[in-house]
Every structure is written in C-alpha cells, then in structure tokens.
Length: 273
Image: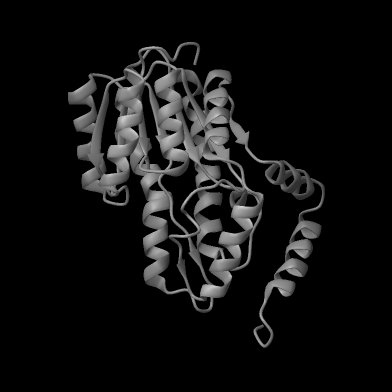
C-alpha cells in the first residue's frame, strides 16, 4: 500500500502481543483501528494506547471461530468506520501435545481459531476491502508454517494451512489491488506459549523458557508487518531462526526434520518416548 494515513485497519487478537503491537504501530502510521479479542481488559489497554496517539478506535468482543459473530463484526466495523483498508488476522492459540494424546476436541478448538478465524476474516471483510482504492490482508502464520514440529501437530497443520491459503489468495486478488501477506514469526515474546493447552506441563514449561530466552519483542514483529504492507510483500519472515529454518528447509527438507528429531529426543524426559 502506498498510503497508510487515514486508513481503517482491523486487527484480531489485539489484546496483547503481536496484535497489540501491530495495532499501536498502525495508529502511529495514521490509521483508525477496529480491534477485536475475547480479553476485554487487554483490549481496553490496547485501545488506550491507540487513543494516546490521537487515533479513533472501536472495541469488539469477538470469538473468531464463530462464523455468525465474525459476520456481525464486519458489519459493525463498516457501520462504525465506513470503510476497511487493512485486515490483520492475528488471533491464534496452540496446543502442546503428542498427536497420540491430542484430543479431537482440542483439534476442533485450534482449527476453529487459527484457520477458520482467518477464513472468516477474509470472507466477511473482503467486500469492504474490494471497495477501497487499495487494501491489504495480513494473515499470521508461523515458523511452524514452514517446518513440522513434534508436539505441535495441530498448530503446524493450521499454520501451514494459513500459508497455503494466503498464497492462493495473493494470486486471486492481484487484479483487485488487494495485497496479501503471510507472516512467519519465530520466537516472539507473546502469551501464546503460556496460555497453550498442554498434555504435559514439562513440555509447555520448556517452550515458555525457550521463548523467554531467545525471543524478540512484539514491537519488532509489528514493524516488519508494517514494512510488508508498504512493500506489498507476499511473505514476511520475522526472526533469525525463521530465516535459518526456511533456508535449511529449501536446501534439504529431510535434513531439517532429522535435526528436529535429534533435538526432540534430547528434550524428552527420561522414560518418555
């Protein structure tokens, strides 16, 4: 997009982490915001930061996995702001579990939020985006949308799906002046690992410690998202490890999985296989 000033941006999962940082970054660029989350207290804090920058903001309590609620959300934003130029499908969750122990109920939960939430967002906001002189969609995938990681089967499945969906949509919408970017963070300091559903608390604790030790602040990820919108990029890799894994995966897909297997075996507590 050539211009962000005085545009209207929609951000899901905006109560914290990448969603909050991106909302604030867009406000700094001159955008009005429509922010959504189930965490109303966190959403209010994000709204305060946006207002402090002198930008209009509307708050919406939304479960992105609820088709009817997402359709109503799009109508609310149109009524409140009169237009939509940028859509950030950011809301996401994870489950840490072996596939064998992973319940189907948790599979349905994560697919509903991570994948259907993205599809619903694109579907219901596309009419307004199509009416804009230029528009952009950002779908948050993951480093786990590049490589398959043990104990993250459902998360990888949804993030690979977001990546493929985004690439297909990028191609379809090129003639409509609507850009589409798939974003692939690695370790970013957000609450996703802490709030994960987990089969084993020890595996969850290891993930939380790893992110705390080697992650970047969400503001850095938000800055790269803004750059991707301005440059109309199809894909945005965020962290150093994302770039590294992407390179290794391209060079040798089997080698990358063998490296993961070796690391996974070292992480397993004694007696677990």
